[in-house]
Image (cartoon, rainbow, N blue to C red; front, side, top):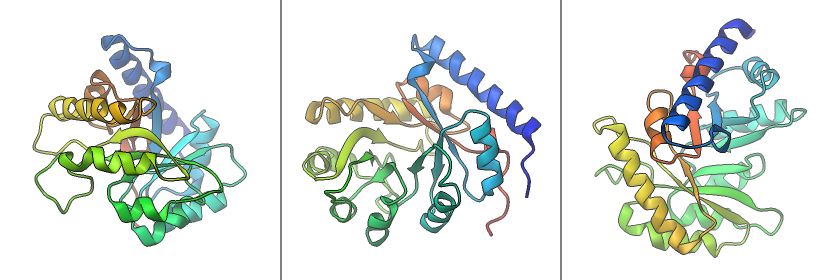
Length: 227
């Protein structure tokens, strides 16, 4: 499957313009905001095309797909972000290709990522819902998990990550994430990053301090069926 460069370029420029506009509205420098293009189900041809357009940060949320794509694209200068739920039994494999993991939410995953070989950047995922079965640590357990991550060899805590619930106004949800970020920075002053904002709500995320956006269809177009 080939990539439609014209459409990719158009969508990418629209998003870049939207990020710049939101950054200006927030009184921020758009250069401080990293746009991660989430390429779930898209073929490597799309990733190569986006790389040609200047994208260097790519996200995947399924381990096997991410692992395979990383192997096929090993010739490219790029950063892989794992943005999905991570099972502890797959965590050690994920750190073999992912430079950044956005979804630490429990002790077993943190323990599985211990390493003396190289540091992996990571975010603690925050659960903004009342459903304990969803991914993310509950707000009351945030500081304890942050302290564990900071004390774990091989991990470098970047900050917090969250997904705005569908039934919540996005900016209000991201305001909670900003508050959680303040709490984490009290533990690790270097953990200043916020991974928040997707295709439909990245403007609100930027207004509340997001430093890393996880954008899929607004750039890649609709996802093809799972292969």
